[in-house]
Image 1 (tube, one colour):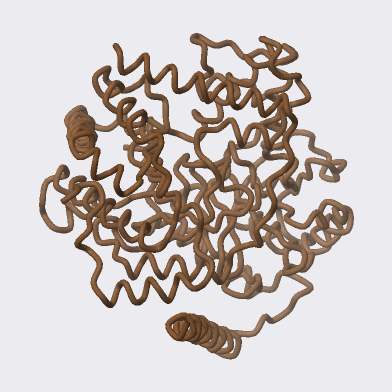
Image 2 (tube, chains in turn green, blue):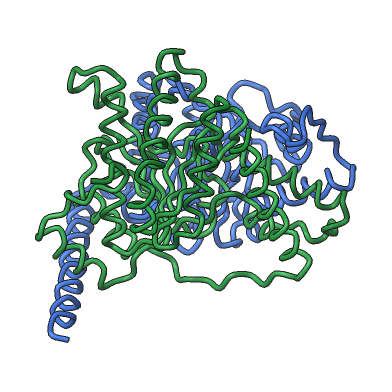
Length: 284
Length: 253
């Protein structure tokens, strides 16, 4: 069984309810702030690391539900740049957890490819330990042709950092005459960012803030859904409730803004450069 | 074919049941709540309620944002938020103008606030209006600084900042080939007047969206619902502040 996509978490009743909810509009991109692992550990009197492990298991269940619901893109906030401020022990545990999970993903890569899951790790990768940088780069390269579900994992990420990195690329684009200054507008910034706009953002554990996650992307049409449940206790019913909420409140779909050829060329160029950089990281 | 028909039927039934439950809940709230006493002035009841509740608010609120939709909220209602903030001692209050109507009617809004201000100690400073208090410094005690922001103050302003950096009209020193958040923040501080990041954003209605509210500044802003319908009253306002006070900020730790 794959540890990344839990196949055995859907009963007949679940499947039936998924089918009913799927009749309506389903978000095409859903983002999660998976909050509450540590509070869960405290509540159940287990060590912090167990909470994080249970949190990861919940992610594998959620991915299965999203696949069944036909949601093509899921983004999760796994580790913020601010989280480096946590105790050395906890940061080490979280890095080890990531190492273990990404390595197991590479071991079961055939299964992942069969599911059609494409992984993208979004964040300032240079802040991660060198070996982890190489592992996550390999994960991205090996799954790049999958197209059923795109899973973005925000790791060593903050939205401000993401906007700043996009700004650097745009300023560089002007400097190297790939862009004119007037090409830089809000839409081009949106497309230069690593993550796309979600339709629905779910934050668990009762917190009602964004904590520096996707600040730019949620501006226009994202429905924010805050729920009290702790992430390791998040169930399919919570997910379906979030989707029903989305169906009641989603704004109408807008067409993508037009894009000029020069902007298109620029975006293609930075995409190619990104893949080249990842190949270099794998080689190191 | 039949399965799809039943699927659709059940789907519509589920949404119908939710709609009925929400409607019943709204009717219940409307009939069982205390009616607003007066809408023209801040009443003794308001003052008493504020006086009773303010001592419980231990977490200092620096900047409050009201997500204002002029199709739902009247200028009268929004004007009260300025007065209540003055009574509570919130130094910065921003109205985020979703429809664009509030900016057009800023003068009218200003007069509505001034009308209700009578007899209340403290000063109201409008960022875009001449100062009637005779003070040019917004740091006096019991001063509330009022701003109205719109979509243009968010994404388009950040885009303008990046254009200015590209044109070298604004400095952005980078220690590596990619700007850090702190470096871009420094450049952006030239674009925005110095106001603190919002601590709290209030919205009404059952769904929460930011509508493009200051994307750079809202990283730690708490989004709290003021009311389920679009009503604005002092007890809901104080209730939202109490809710904010129970929130525990951890700054990533």
